[in-house]
Amino acid sequence: MAKELSREELLNKVEETASKCEREVHGCGRCALSALMEHFELGDKASTDLILKGILPLSGGIAQTRNTCGALIGGLMAIGMVFFPGKLEEAELDDIKAAMALGKEYYRKFEKEVGNVRCFDIREVGLGRVFDTTDPDEYDKFVKAGAYDLCSKVCGKAARLAGEFILRIQEERKTS
Figure 1 (cartoon, rainbow, N blue to C red):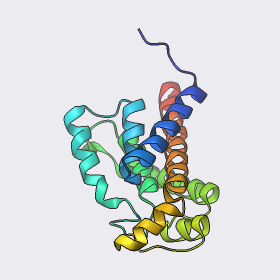
Figure 2 (tube, rainbow, N blue to C red):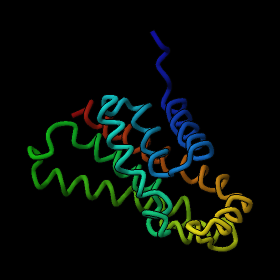
Figure 3 (cartoon, helix red, strand yellow):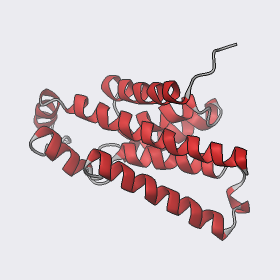
């Protein structure tokens, strides 16, 4: 049987897994969400594959439009998956409101810790300028400027923060 990880060890693993995924295979939304799904055991193989396919176009600030950070979206999705463990249609309006409040709290914490929620702004501040990654020449410049170092850190941070929220949900459920 595997050794149970401490809270800090688990959060470190989530952060490392998300960061490594972004550095090696890319897709910030997918990488943040897959790390959370793996380490918090959210979903079976078939549902995980389907969900990760679905989030992939949300990377690069939603389909490379540089809007809301895909890693932030991946974190929000994982929080929602844990918050609603049963059938969604059984959720009461108060449950939905509580999930939205928790999602907003995560959003604000991400914004505070990363500095921005928009991919455009994160890249501009972190890399000194904005790149049109749909253009092959610009993409090469983006990579050379250290994009995957920046994005892997943001991805890891998003996953770690979401992991903190997931642990809080789980702890609150144990005590109620």
